[in-house]
Structures are given as structure tokens and as C-alpha cells.
Length: 150
Image (tube, rainbow, N blue to C red; front, side, top):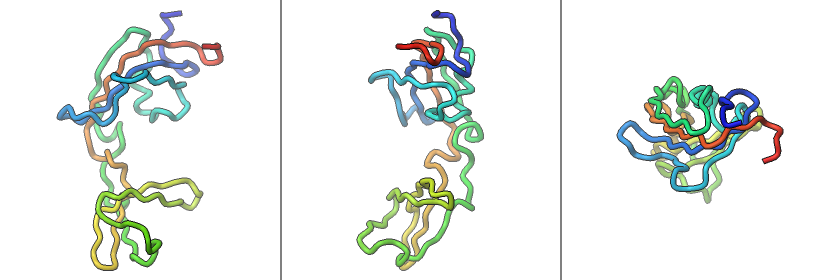
């Protein structure tokens, strides 16, 4: 079964690292337990899954991922300004603070405070990694069909 390539309907055990192009590590499992995920379960964004397709156990590779294939370009329309009074009085509002909002469909929408000026609070809803080229390093440990006991 070691020859099974990564595809829809497979469970993949892998090590991965996500880095900035300067080598700074954003996230990595190489020093920890490997991650296990099913292709299509949304644990990995679809664009990142695409890089895994066809890889087999034992394969290792590193990919340069442009913003369009990672978390998108920074979109100025995703920066919103709110009044201080729209937040609870005890909430800490300063640059870099993550706030979770519920969107119209009640799903969670994280935003980061990018500026606080007087009564104005500017919140950036772009993904924190938007506009960045990333390095996606992968080592496939095991690939098995979904539905098999492990």
C-alpha cells in the first residue's frame, strides 16, 4: 500500500512547514507529531492540497506559493472602520489584537485591529498572511485510503 498517491479519498500523514520567503517559520510539524488529514476535509486550504496530489509516502518537496495560491493579495476593501462604542467597554483595542466577528451567515470572521485613533477603530479582515509569498515544505509519511482502520 506504500505506493498509493495522494488524491481525493486518501488520508495523509505528513510533516509540513510553512515559512516566509526569508526562512522565518510560521508553522511546522517537523519537530512535533506529524499531522494527519483527509484530502478535502478543509484542514488544509484546497490550494495547498493541490501541491500534495500525486505525492507518495517517503516523498519530500518544497514549494514556493505565491499569494494568489496561498491567502490572496491584501485587499483594501477588507479593512473596515468601526466606532469605539460598537465594542464592549472592557475590550482591549490596540494594534495587533485579533477580534472575532460573526458575519451575516453567523460564521466566525477574524479581524486584526490595524489602527486605533480617537473613536475610530480600524480592523483588517485580510488573512494575516495575505500578500505574502510562502514556502510550503512537505514530507509525506503515509498515504492510505479513507475508511480503513488505522
